[in-house]
Picture 1 (cartoon, rainbow, N blue to C red):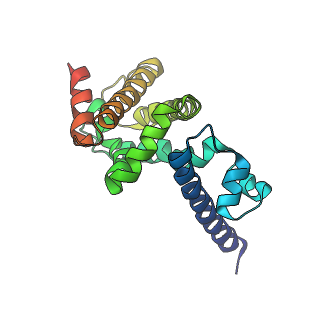
Picture 2 (picture 1 turned 45 degrees about the horizontal axis):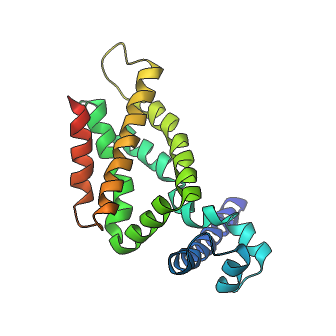
Picture 3 (picture 1 turned 180 degrees about the vertical axis):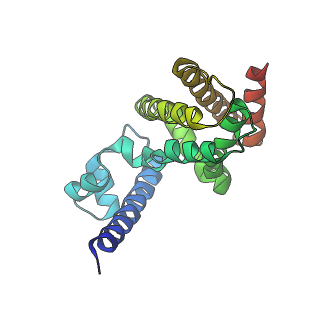
Length: 197
């Protein structure tokens, strides 16, 4: 077995353990409240030591938000894959389907997690910080798309990416406030349409 395969297997195992710890943590946060649960409580509920929990997850916030780590890159990859004749705004909207897919796959769990994040200032701030890291990644993906010459300036591309993320957050806020009843895709479409003009 070569080093690459070994690393890959290790990474897969690590990701599986991290996901399992995050699932235990999310359940505990939802039942007892984020602020009332300690790292020691999380480790005990997961059946691991405090140091093991922290080695895999890092913090209480990351126990909830680590699932979102890859979304910026995934959305950027989806953006690069959009048809060349599609305008940037439409391409951004479609690229965010990778984030919406998480909410559509398990709406009950996604609603509970989204509500937990929105109602916990530390989690909300940390998610916005993560999304702030997505913005330059999306702006770069926009810059790499073929289009009119000259392409928009880096500032304009950053504004488009930030606006797209703003639309996503507003759609999620409405979806969460409505107990997940409206179609999240339709909400995101409506948010994008409000800025399309």
